[in-house]
Length: 339
Ligand SMILES: Cc1ncc(COP(=O)(O)O)c(C=O)c1O
Image (cartoon, rainbow, N blue to C red; front, side, top):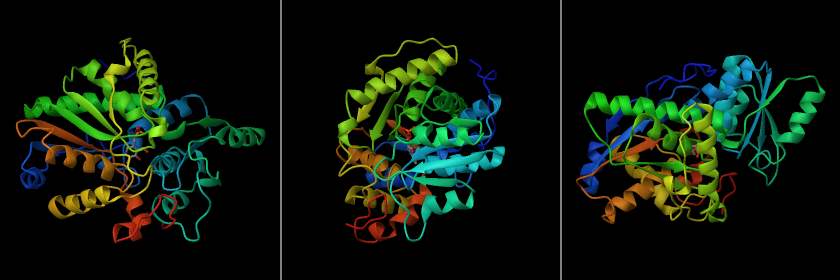
C-alpha cells in the first residue's frame, strides 16, 4: 500500500538501522534481541516523534499554518522534536509544558530554547489541558495556529508509525529474518496504534507489546479503548478501512513503578547495562522502562531463547542530562525535583 498522497514534510533520516544486540543476548542467555534505532531519526537528537511530525507538519503546511502549538512534560522529547521540526519548516512554535521554570534549563528544555520555541508553563498540567487558551490568544494576535495534540498522537501523527512498520517489514524481508515480538515504550499511543495498523497493512504477524510508562489510573481498559479509536481513525485516514478491537492491543502496566518520569532501580539498571554492554543510550522515562521490562521478561523465562525479539528504540536520550542525580544515586522526578 502507498501513502504518497498524504501531505508529508521530510524530517527524518530513514530507514533507521536495525541491528542485533549480541552482547546483551549473550549476557541474558536469552533470545536473539534486535533493535530498531528510532533514536537515530536524526532531527535534533532524534526519537519517535520525528516520524509523526513528518505528517503533522505536512498537514499544518498544507492548511496554511504559520504557527504550531503542542504540549508535554518539562522534559518532553515530543516538544523538543516539534520545536526542531517547526524551525526546519519556518513555523513559529509554542510549547505548553507541565511544571514551572527551573533555575537552569537542561536536557530537552535547554534544547527547546535553542530551537527557538516559546514556552508557556502549565503547572500540574502536562497533557495540554491549557493548549486551547494559548491557541485562542495566538489566533487573537492573527497567527494561523495548528494544534498538535499531546504526544502527536492523532490519526495524522500515527500515520508515521504505519509507514515505520512498512519500513521495518521491508528490512526484515531483506534480512530474511522474522521477528516474534516487538517491544517498546507506550504513552500517548500514536506509536502503538500506528504499528498495529501498519502490521495489518504490511502483513507483520508477530506480537506487538507496549510497555506503559504512565500511572495506572489511565490503564486498562481506558488506554486500550483510546488505542482502538486511534487505530480506527488512522486506518480510515490512510484508506485501509481495517477493523480494530481492544484485543489488538497488548499493553503491560506492570513496569510503571512509581509513575511517569520517576526513575527506579529497574530503569537505572537497564540504562547502565545497555550502556556498558552495547554502548547504546536509553532514556530514564521511556526506553529505560521498556528495556527494563524486556530484560525482566527474558530473565524470568517469559520469552524463550528460541524467539527473536525486536526492541524498538524510540529515543529520549537528551533527558538523561536532566536525571544526572538519579542516575548516579538518588531518585529524580521528571520535573527535576529530588526526592
Ligand atoms: C522516547 C519516547 N519513547 C516512547 C514514547 C511513547 O510514544 P507514544 O506517545 O507514541 O506512545 C515517547 C513519547 O513521548 C517518547 O518520547
